[in-house]
Length: 213
Image (cartoon, rainbow, N blue to C red):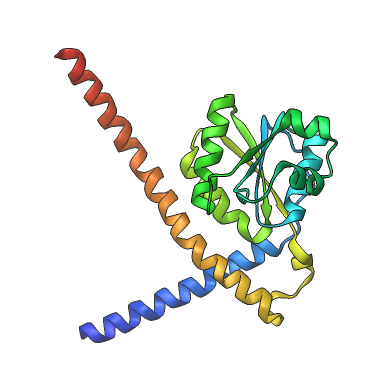
């Protein structure tokens, strides 16, 4: 068999695998989540829609977590605007809501959330974001915080779950775009998890060497 045919076969197989993965991804994010009694140390919401913030605020109000981090806040958005969007009373907002202005993307959200959770000593977080954004968010957060339990709470933006995605061009484009962003995030997580035992071994060996010297 020629190298050309091998390459064509490999490419066709890769495309088929990617297509199957996309269908599984789309069906997963469009599925209605099971109703659960969510509890965690804290709550983080990744900005991108007002419904996300309002839903995260509801969880805080119900005492599902001690504090709420709104990650990725626009520099031009002040506390009064976020107070109005959240629907919380001013006392609760001032007491228990933290604003993160540093994150510019999902990778930044993960870093901002890790620093917040570590500062507060949290071991578990409820993660609030759009349903289609949840897989990538969990991948980035898990890579930054391998020892923190993540509890997903996806929000349905603009009634997305009520649509038959393969019959709706806009929904299909949105899901395809997010799937292509999710793949490298998932790859980074797999690589990080694969390297972690080696990193631990290297750190242990280095520590032992320093003690001997």
